Image (tube, rainbow, N blue to C red; front, side):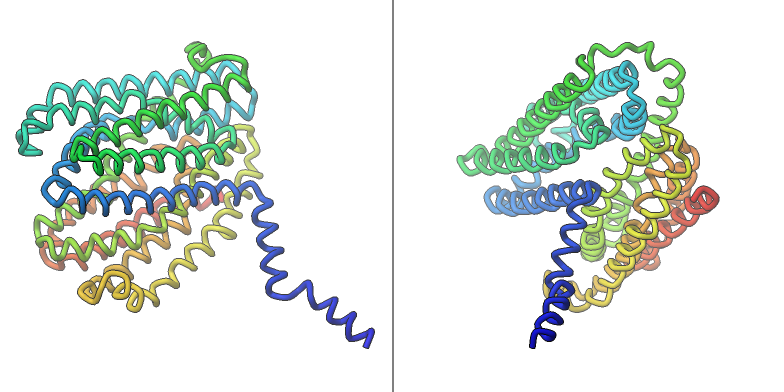
Length: 451
C-alpha cells in the first residue's frame, strides 16, 4: 500500500492541471510574454469597448446622424494621415539603441526631435482642416453647420502629437505595462465620455467633442508619464535635448522617415481602398461579404501588433550593441518557436469557418465563407512573419522593405480593378492573398542569408 501511495505521489505532478499550472507559471515569469499579454489585452479590450460604443451610439443617433458624425471625424483624420510622418517607428529604433548604449544626450535629442516633428505635422494638418472645413462640410458632409465640429476634431491633433514619441520612449525603456494600462484607462474614459454626452442629448456634437477631449487627455497623460520617466532616468526634460547630439545620424533618420511614410501611404491601398473600389465596381452586397471576411481574418492583428511592439525595441537594442550573432539567434527563435506555431494554429481555424461564421452573423452570410478562408491564409502568413518588419527596420534596410511591400502593392493595384470587375469579391480576396504571398516571398529573399 505504501508503494502504491508513493507511485500516486510521483504521478500527481504530471497531471494535466499540474502541467497547465507549470506552463502558466513559466510563461508569465518571462517578461516577453507578460508584455505581449498586456498589450494584447489592451487591444482586445479597447476593440470590445469601441464595438459597444458604436452599437449604442448608432441606436441613439439613428443612421443619418450616426453617418454625419462619422463623416465629421473622418475628414480631419484623413488629412492627418496624409501628413503623418510615422515617427514612432524611427523613435523606437534610435531610442532603443541609444538607451542601451547609455547615450544620455542622444536619447534626449531623439525625444525632442520626435516631439517637435509630430507637433509641426499636427499643426500643419490642423491648419489645413481649419481653412478647408467649410468646403468639406458642404461637399463631403452635406451640412455647412458641422464645419466647426471638424475644426474641433482637428484641434485634438496638437496634444495628440505627444503620443507617438511618448509611446516610443516607454517601449524603448521596456515599460509596456504603462502603455497597456494607460491605453485601457483612456479608452474607458473615451467611451464613458462619448456615451454620456450622447445620452444627455448632445447628439453629433457629443460624439465629436467626446472623442476630441479623450484624444487630448490621452496625449497629455502619456506625455507627462514619459517626461517624468525620462527625467528620472536621465535627469533632464526631453526638451533640453541638443540637436548637435544627432550629428552623423540625421540623414539616416530622415531616410527612415521618408521610406516609412511612403510605405505607410501605399499600404492604405490593400488596407482601405480595396474595399471602396470593390463597392464602387460591384455594389454594396459584394462589398459587405468582403468586408466581413476581411474583418474576421484581420482579428489576428490583435496578437501580431503586440508581438511587433515588444520585439522591435528588443531587436533594436541587440543590433545597436553590435551583438549580431545573438541578434540572428533571437530572430530565428522568434520565427520558429513563436511565429511558425502561431501561424499554423491560426491556419487551422479555416476548418471551423463554415460552422462558426453562420452562427455569428447569420446564414445570409454563408456566401462569405470561402473568402474568409482565403483571407485567413493571408492573416496566418502575416502572423507567422510578424518579426519581418522589425527585422528590416532595426538594420536600416528601408529600401528593401519598400521594395518588398510598396512597389509590389503599386503593381497589384494596377490590375486590381480588372480582377474585381471579372471575379468580384472572391477575386478581391485572392488578389489580397497573392499580394501577401508575393510581398513575403520577396522579403524572405532579402533576409535569407541573415538568419
